[in-house]
Structures are given as C-alpha cells and as structure tokens.
Image (cartoon, rainbow, N blue to C red; front, side, top):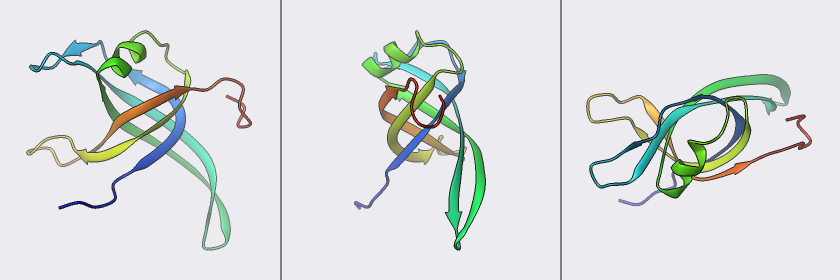
Length: 106
C-alpha cells in the first residue's frame, strides 16, 4: 500500500544520542527537534511548540553526530511507529539542512 507520508520541519536540536551502528552496518543517531512557530488555525494565529523525536541513518547520521545542541535545522522525512510494541510516532529524517541566520532568528 502506498500513501502520502511526508513531514517537513524546522527547529533546533534539543537532544542527540551517541552515534551507533545498526545490525546492517548503518550509522544511526536518535534525538529530539524542538519546534516553535506561529500558525494560522481557523483564521486565528496561535503559537505552536512541539518536541519531535527523530531517527536518522547513513551519512546524514555521521554529519549530525558531530553537531551541537541548539543548532537550527530544517529536516524532511516520514513518520512511523517506533517499533511493533511502541506505537509512538518518530520522524525518520531523510534530509537535514543546518540553518544559520534565517528570517526566524535562528
């Protein structure tokens, strides 16, 4: 079954795990992105905050493992359950871009 499952998010790195390796030999980093923005809902502006858990694999994980907490980032990926037993959603990051001095004050 195919369907749309895409998420794009900007925020700052709030947590980053130590890089480890999957059984398949891929580098893996887990963490949390802290997001804050103003969004329009039902015609009204509201302040939105969220802490989104993520996982990132491959070369992007190598790069991320060397970054610092608080670094502003833009990520794109998909959401999936953490595991068969833990159905909590986790963002699986496919691409990450480090932001500096954008219009949001990062």
